[in-house]
Image (cartoon, rainbow, N blue to C red):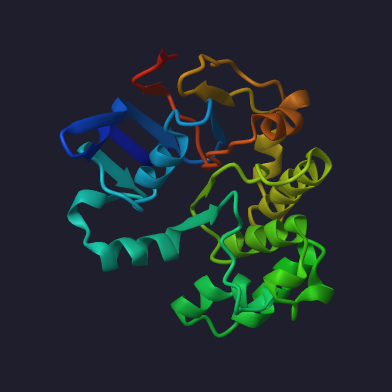
Length: 253
């Protein structure tokens, strides 16, 4: 299958004065288009750092990243931004909505950047799918945490991304609201990618990986939805990663 993400010998080290902190070390894997991958681990184990590097939001200290057929090392900031706007969707733990924009305006930001003339129509369709069509004119401050995350979900799918990264999308929500958000995530996947639900429910190729806490096992179809919710961190790719290593855990399948 097509590889949508390739990581080779990735490292990330932060320097403060004479001290160095290596967060990620010798990470190599390839991601195939068409499946789901989740990363779990304790706070500080490098999950968000890894996600940011994979998406081209930060630069590695060493190693190579190929995203959607593009070697990120060869792209400048503007080219990386163009790639993300065209191919990548994001969902963040703290929503990252623009406070001065309405729900609809937040959703269509990626489309407006692309000059899509149907941005408003697409945005309203997505808000309807997440149950917020009647709140399109409300600002983030007028929405609950769960509602803000639903707007963020709609925005993440607005450009119909080739790959979607979600950084603890239910981390700031209570259990009931978080589970609804995950269900909506899959609802949007079905809406935009007609063949995905069948794969999602019946494939046994799902794998959970842990940074710092060893968890590596297939997820059965009957527990997929619940397991993904409990993980509370989705590196929701359209993919499955074959191998990963971190300073605290070396994992291979």
